[in-house]
Image (cartoon, rainbow, N blue to C red):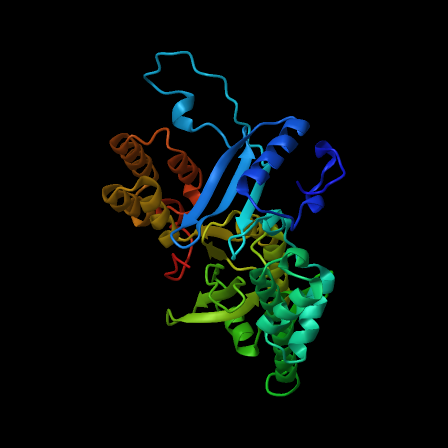
Length: 393
């Protein structure tokens, strides 16, 4: 049918890419013969059709594709012995599409996601044409003509658009990084000679961390280093990178900012770098209290860099977690009393046990984890420390 000289079991995908046959049944016969030679069965998985073209797409998959549904594995009212499981998640599949003229069917393996790739040579070609002023649609049309058709190009039009956009974003990030470093350098040389700025690059010479703090921020920290609050939940910048703001409170209970940092991710290494840099900027002066949102990586970095500081968890995040995990307004209300009220220690333990009994939470994982952290969030255990009115980040 396809004029192939190989035995069906020896065929590979490139032997049938772009081939056409006049009838759908001929493709079905071909794939049935191939699967029998290799040693697996097939079945029809999906069929697409519309009013204009009728059936225009068909996909065959291995008979053992997918998995048996959970509700058929162990139903409560089972009466018969369960059948043996025959589905193992096999990914073998075969697609064909009808041509626009309706006179033939073409194999479509080339355009499966796992078989599409914009190679480095194609990416370089797209980059060159974009700098020459060509539109992406014109670039794709030119590359299709050069390759002799989409089936020989190796990727779809959408892949080319995504690649062009990714390269543009990478160049924009690099340009903005250089602009930021240049701006900070100009400030150090002229208007703010005591401005502190430090950055780090990765193995590809890309900016991964940067911290800066001007003279006013440093002066405020020297006076009001009792409480330091920071988190990285503010990620609305153009590059979706964690922005860290180090803040505290002054003698008028007004918020004051001690410094800023942009990180590449929220891992322990990132937090350790920014906290060590913060200490270098502030002459190794540790804060008395640190308030954070409870991130595990952040907590580990604080233990390493601020071993003498008291760590408090953000009350707002705890209340939000209580609402999302327990889903009871009454529980959240009672939990907030344990969070902020000045009970003595025996009273606090008595009310916590009563809360677990009332809402039947003795086996709840979130309640157990939160209880283990009680010394970092309950006012009963923290009332001997000064927080300057800061209980949230």
